Each structure stands twice: as C-alpha cells, then as structure tokens.
Amino acid sequence: MRAGNARTVVYHEFQHYMQYAYDSGCYAFLEPNYLNGTAAGDAEFLEGYADLAKDAVDAAVDLTLFNDIVAVYNPAQSFYDKSYRDVFSKYFSEQLGTQWNTTDPHWHMDAVRRHYEECDARDTLYVLDTLVPALKSSMTEEKLFLDFFAANWAKDWASATTQPELSISMMTPGLLMARSPCIKMSIFPAVRRAGLARAPRMTGLPGISR
Image 1 (spheres, helix red, strand yellow):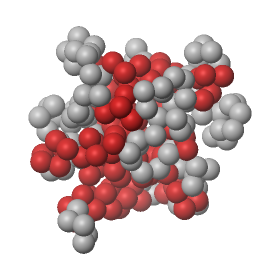
Image 2 (cartoon, helix red, strand yellow; image 1 turned 135 degrees about the vertical axis):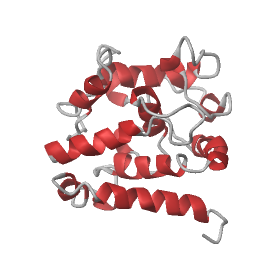
Image 3 (tube, one colour; image 1 turned 90 degrees about the horizontal axis):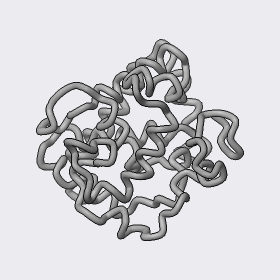
Image 4 (tube, one colour; image 1 turned 120 degrees about the horizontal axis):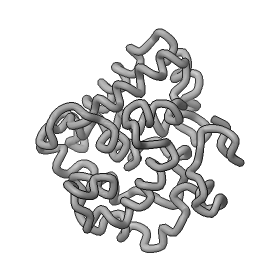
C-alpha cells in the first residue's frame, strides 16, 4: 500500500476471496495444499490467478501490469514451481476464454472462473487435462503448453488475428526474450526431457507430484 499500489493489492486479494467462495470441494483442496506458496504447493494457480486479477479490473493498470511482471519473470523455472508473477496464467485465460472484448480489462477471464468451477466439481486444481479441451475443442493440455513455449519468442511478431496462439497481449516487445535470450527448453523441464514429444502432464512426471 505504501508503495502506491493500493488498487492492485485490493484486486489481488479480492480474487483470493473469490477463490475461497468455491467451497463445494475446491476450497478444501486450496487451503491445505497452498504450503506457504512453495514450489510443492498450488500457488502457481492461487497466486498466478490473483496476480492476473490485478490486470483485469482497471484499464490503466491493464496497459502496464504484465510488462512489470514479465520484467521479473524467470522462464528457466517450471510453471508448476511458480507462484506470483506468472505469465502462463495470462496466456491461459487469453487463449481459452470466450467472453468480453479485447478492450475490456477482464477480457477472457471466464476461463479462470471455469477452472474454479471444475476444481469445485473434482476437488482439485489440477484439472487442465480435461478442462483445456472442454474450453477449446481443438486444444489439449500438451498443445497449450507448447504454444505458450513458442509464444515466448513469437509474441513480438505474431499476428493476434491470424496467429492468436502465438500472441500475448499488453506486453512490450522483447521483454521475455530480453529476460532470457537462452530460454531453450527450460520453461518446462519435462518437455526438454521428453524431447518435445509431449508437454508436461499433471501426473507421472519426475519431480511433479500432481
């Protein structure tokens, strides 16, 4: 608050309030599996979506927030080890949501709501294997991760109209690449180990107990 970010703090914390409202089964999973935001917990979704919410209320904040997040983004770390400042949460919502216009700060945030609803139904956040194709019939969990991997480079040149899978909105060109010019296959280590044959799944991968 003292740093002048009162609005974004409120937006972030209110998203947590909304997360906890899904209490038919999801909240019982969220709370004990948070683990203080450690890599072993579920903070990649809890904090990732709460940060995304900071970008989804105020149009002025929407223009700059994820530029700041990308500036400290570490692409050498697996998505499942992240918590705050997660770029994949933005990519997920933009690619799989369907509601509202691109000029709305909350554009495609309905994908996040659908994730909470599925968590409530299945008592776990780790539902992308079925949620992703349910939100977009031509998409799989694996393809979504690989498209995100490609978008880390291509977002600066891709057409949002003809190549939406390679686009991430509201980001200054070059930020991800400038952050790590040698991203290689380190965004998702399991993909590197698999030789790009498959993207990481929720279960069955070394070091990922989902």
